[in-house]
Length: 84
Image 1 (cartoon, rainbow, N blue to C red):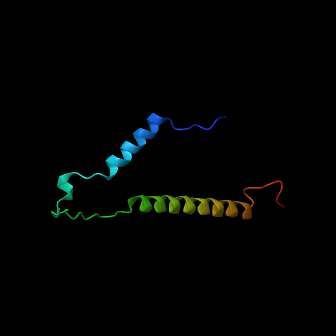
Image 2 (image 1 turned 90 degrees about the horizontal axis):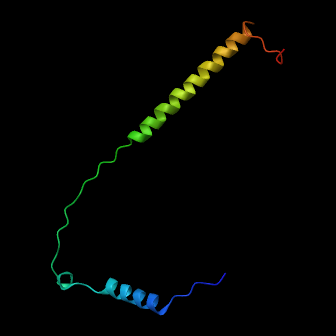
């Protein structure tokens, strides 16, 4: 496959875009200070709380199921053919 080479028109357009990026309007060239309002952001970690809650619930339920199965195996209510 041949490498795509820029045409003369594409090169001229790229030059024009570069020139427009570096030119400033007269309003911006004046040395007036522009006041920017300060924005206070409050970070909440609700997604983290929800994920931790889901993880705790899932882990606790798996441990309870394992303990229940252990109790059932120890009391010989549940018998597995592979486990003697």
